[in-house]
Length: 219
Image (cartoon, rainbow, N blue to C red):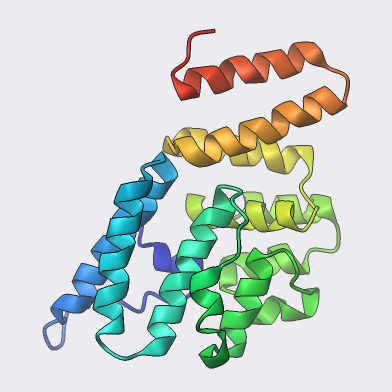
C-alpha cells in the first residue's frame, strides 16, 4: 500500500535511500499512519484509533506543529473517502497555526473550497476542484492514479453536492478493487438510495444484495 502522505502533502516522513540515518520517529510514524488508514478502511475502529495515537505522539514529540496538522488532515481525508463527514476536530484545534494550503485542503475536504483555491491543493486534487462542470470533475477523479487519493476526491465532490452517477460508480469500483469495506458500503448505500429515488426498486434491491454480501449477511 502506498504512503498516504500523497493524499495531501509531500512525503514528509519518507525515508531517503542515502544521507544520514532516518530518525526512528519518522519511520514509526509513517508505519503507524499506514496501519491506521488501512484499519479505518477495513472498519476496524479500535485499531485505527490506537495506531493514529501512536503516529501523532511520535510526530508531536518533534514539536513540529505543521507535521501534526498534516497528520490530522490525512486522518480527515481518509474519512472523506469513506463519506464520513463529522467535524475535523483534530485539525480545528490546530487551525490557528495552519498554513494557507492546510486551510484550503481542510475546506476542500469539507466541500466548501472555491475553484480559486485549486492551486493550493495537492496536485492530484487540483484538476478536480478547478473542473468547470460536475462531469468534468468526475473525469478528473477517474484520472487520479492513486486509489485513496481518488476516493478522497470523490468524497469531496459528494460533500459539495457534485457527485454524478459515474462518480459514484467509479468510487464503488475503486473501493471494491482495493477490498476496502468501509468506503465500499458507504458508496453502495449512496447508489441504492439514488436507485430508490429514481423509482427503480429492482436495481435498488440488487445493490442491497451486494451490500449484504459485503456485510456478511445472508439475504
